[in-house]
Length: 515
Image 1 (cartoon, one colour):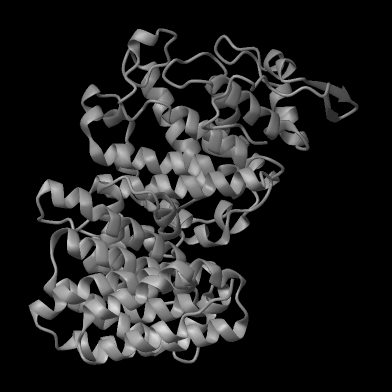
Image 2: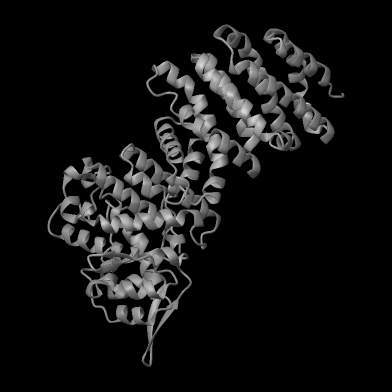
């Protein structure tokens, strides 16, 4: 069946020019039925269709811009149908998408901006929500998989994004829930356009309007569970400098900051699962380096004498710092292959600190405090002693995980662990091969760390060979459990493997071990 729309669009245009929106809406009805068939239409038909629709938009711009409230009410159904047709046509045929964003793309954006701004002024409630939703869907379909159109949409509409994302603020609960449709589609639009923007503009976050959009996007997606919220926040998490701005921004609280850390973890997990022995996704490097710097410079927040207290369960700042460490632990298998991060050094108290040295130092302090008596840092085999809401829960495990992963095939890190704080690093790990209900699977992670430390490192192997009992732990027996034996050949220590690795099958799916 052929596609015939020219006659109806001509009638529609004439009715629009005289302000007869009802007749113009009737003219659109047969076109809306044919729009899905544009998917198989020729380029020539697509071009004619787009040019006529742009003509309709041009007339709309003039009519809507100066309309009164009565005329706007008549125009509402026409606007809904017109943008539904354009939305569907962009999804049906990439040629239509290209034409709308082509030579006349700026005109399309200008007309749409005037229409949606007028709608915001004249409509309210469900009428406004429905029209904004379909208009933003058109922009989203226009931008999808088209870098040129993404730039076009961002340049013309980024100042509107904040208003759309803030729609629910101050509204009754019923209106708020209905408005989430607009928030959701705006989140999708930001997710589609954002990566291009900070790539083409190195000073992206320094522009107040861009940062204002980021704040509103974080707040909206933290408050509401939106379909496209997770992907939107994942894109935000990759904007260089964003975490630094998030931590400094007075408008954002601990909940929003924790939400962004979760989004960083989502990006890391996706990247890690795609390539478990690859470097950190480049777009995350800046934000991961910031987390290291922030933790080192604010070391007092996780001081052991503060962590041991039960009251720490209610300390939001402690929880946030632990969340940062959890994020770095999630990323540590990738950081091991990213020298710019693993070797990233923070100058603190005239003593340079890398991530691995920070982890060893904090683990050492926690372990000492835990041995001073029964407290929230003490290792225990009783589940009844465990408070899963306390910031120390699983903290040791994440520190051991960081140390182990950063030691994988990295001699500098392996040597740093051995020499740390008067050669305490390796014995400290042996002391964590025991059961601890406050740190599930820490024994397996400690064994994995020790395996990484002695493989291909004769100095570490010799150090372990010369160790006596560490508490009640037999170092050589632990290595044997890991499938490793140390043999002396002349002056050398040879590490032999039986092909086995530490028993890791019980580790949770959320935090799978990585070599």
